[in-house]
Length: 324
Figure 1 (cartoon, rainbow, N blue to C red):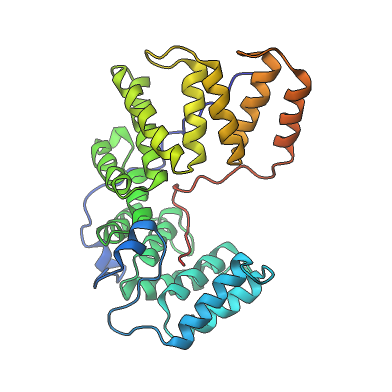
Figure 2 (figure 1 turned 135 degrees about the horizontal axis):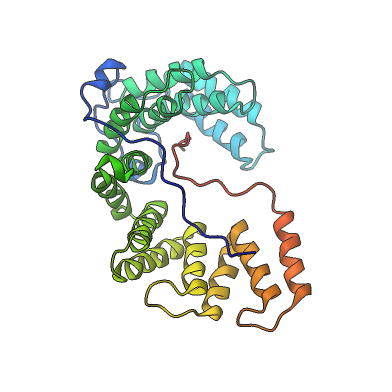
């Protein structure tokens, strides 16, 4: 049973052409100023410069977040959805975005992708970068609308140009396909997101350099990947923590195998609830890699893995995201 490797499959699709007026085609333009910090972290509630949200709507929005998270109240997605709807009816853009996410995912009620698409279109048209990015996600997957990667690309570009980090990550994913000849463009967008301190984007850069080594580039690519994984891991990114463990356990590039470091990073990844890291800790103890074989300890880790629930979701593969 081999160690589980972190590399993802080649990402879906290749974006062709430039924006080519697609934003106009779908009736969207990101305009106006947004809060810099909110845009850079993927959070916040950038509002339309034309009409600020009413205090009542903002209060309903904050209340909805509390119910969605169970923050000080019992978690209740139905209550959250109702409060988002109340604020969205008053024109609150963040609420339209978050209600759309709940509608698309069936949180707190039935799935309604058409209604979600309508809300995202409205909020995006008012200059909300998160909604614009989420609208791109809907076009990318064909949710409530025909699949259209060209439209998704244009929407991601609009949101990324407004400083919204998840859109930068999505662009990096969308144009990363090497056969499209646009891998450099994808790398540039991910680099911009990483420069803002985004842990997931720093991890993605590490993946780029890991693949460069896999395809025959010099060992310095592995060194660069490892440095990036350390940065991302220090920011709490569990996939980066796990990737570091693999580097040490497999002895990639010019680096020698170091089972002690591999176990250390695997344990740290397991503490971050990485299922893959839990598996590798169990595997290390079962096989006695750098430690005396310990079947009982190995089984405890495998049991923890079995009880860990669903695998962790990768947070940067064209997913709908709420704001706060």
